[in-house]
Image (cartoon, rainbow, N blue to C red; front, side):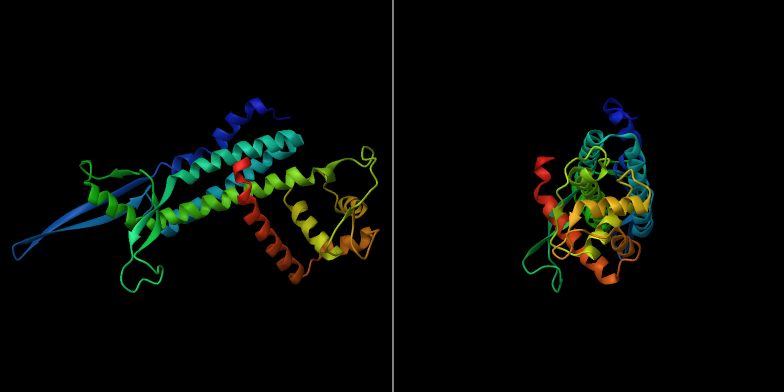
Length: 279
């Protein structure tokens, strides 16, 4: 069993790599040339946190994303429902701090730029990064601004990965918040009224397959899980759902069913952003 007073220590450990990469260091070099009596200065980006390309930087962030979700979910079996809600709330707070690493700034639109229809557009950049340059002199403000714009793709990828991470944590939170009734043992659940659904058994089975695969429930036996789900819900055409029929759709959801579920989850994630202020 994991207790709430150990959450700060656990989260410090789990978020340590993300916290390390969120301390953005932009390294650069400046070279000068003198051609025909006119001196020119060239500014060159040499890396962001040691990564010399956006591809390798993004790959590392995605690795941290997958690793962090795995670590957070490993804690779930050792928590009760109340503890899991609190743990996920504190995880979301940590994640929101990572969203402060980048900010949108207005930039002038170049002629022919397809991204804007006015005189300015917003571009994601790093917020107060560290600039590293040998011999280490503090760069002028115009150089800082130029480096922020040069590294905007790095910043954009950082924002995308962190936003996706926060969305996943919200999704896990809603699963715990609204579907814990499915974890109540049958011997303790004396209420026989079923939850009426607007959808059919195929959609119910596909959604429950998603929840089952997420590891959010303690039930590991598929047959037992499908029997429990069938006993708790009804559809417009089936007041009593057959556990066998539910299990067939559970084991083999159709591509059309999966696409419909993806669309529904997309709407759920959009709606969750409206509730963010409450958590």
